[in-house]
Image (tube, rainbow, N blue to C red; front, side):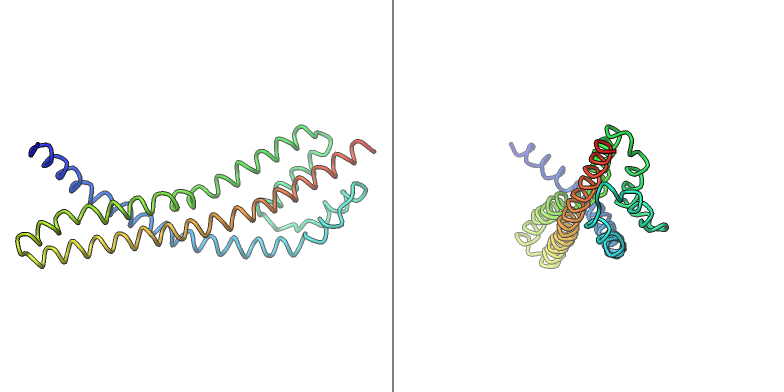
Length: 200
């Protein structure tokens, strides 16, 4: 039994370095995600300002005018799919596929946020528990310096893991709300296109 316990201790201790490396990686990705999220927020605000009125007043009779009102230099995901749908007005099956493709693209954009939300606390907890073993050993041996160092590592990994998870959670919740609204707009446009095709 003693040998089995030693093996488990060696395995857990050996995982500390990979856990710390992954936490540093997720921390960097979280910082980059914050920057990209802010840029995406500004782009979405600009897009909504430009096309919200046009969407609210869209009818089957003025779809062509709506196509002309789209901002020419806007390359956001929503505007890109609106253009694709308007280009394929005569093929409603293709439009339905575009709606499904938009959902996939939106889900892909949220992958990093989902990963940070789930993996941050896991790695943070692992980074907390692994150094506790050596810290207790140091306490038993009277090595206060070793215990303090391991406790420092334990607390630092917890903080980094929770920070990464918080960034992932906030960005995921916000992006879900954005894409739900955009999906609603795309479905509304698709229905207007369908009405136009049924009543030429």
